[in-house]
Length: 465
Image: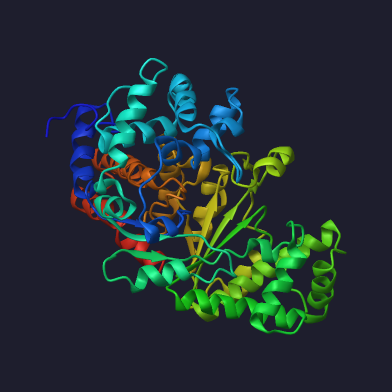
């Protein structure tokens, strides 16, 4: 293979280090993808219908893209965002093409460029001048059977794909895929109970009532806990390996049963103040760890984000529309009650994610370097970009090494971006390892093993695959 761009994209510029990185990347470039945390709708694989248009495929469902277009003056309604959106797909594509220069240097530009090049044989950068031509070329490919979701799933070499699901989801799509002999992939549900654990979440009381009624439990805190256990068991029965918790702060506390019952009754009837809500959330995160000890679900904690920062946008367009904003995050003291109780429990796996990268070296790596239950989550949301991934490796490796990390997590709703995101991680990790090799800190054979393990053995171990 000629060592020219794009083959050398993201690899070091120093020729000697680049050659080592290129060799290490070659170990994993075509390895199957293990995606143990993401947000792709399993229904697209069940239905296996053609994607409708380039905008729906590449823009509308990718809030990395829509948020920057919105910041650049394009209204979200004109980008097809929201449950009732009815924008013209060609106009959506034109908006991206006309603003392509604004994405220069971003991870989104790299991912989209990778998708255009590898899937559609398009090397031209989008612009206002070529917008319609590129739209038509992509549209024509979408009618081919090779661009159906299942064909792409196979082409991407996805071995495992985890979705994110409501606790009351019947998981019918997952059951149908698992029972379909023509589909050989592994699509796993993930238990995501946030809206059932946070008294300040919209509709909390109604959700809890439905949870209790669905599982036939009494309206008490003990009944509520049993209802959650029952639904977790439903997920385990459908192949789930993890439970995901998106919390503002990773605060945990162990309350006595009377205090928990009092807070629960106030929470479900909307009578809990902010301090009480914090205590209830902290106790429920503690209870989720206790349940993971019992049922084996890996506990992932995505902390430190102010969700739906702009309330008017949330009211008009719903969640996950680009305005989840990072805040400072501290794990050491917040998780101590949980870790004192369960941190050394056999079989418990907890993966800590953050978008506050100062916590990687200050807290997360030292914690994972002691507690057998803790693993360092891959860079997520604002940090899943080349330079941030490099900073992450530098921040955590000297303290905890590579084998206390989770492997890459793509965390995406944009199905076509999955291989692009994993390719970025593989290139950046190969580059980081190459530097260690050329500096005499890691041998080349060991670096080759680490490169392979980062995309296979490590995520399998962490997520109990």
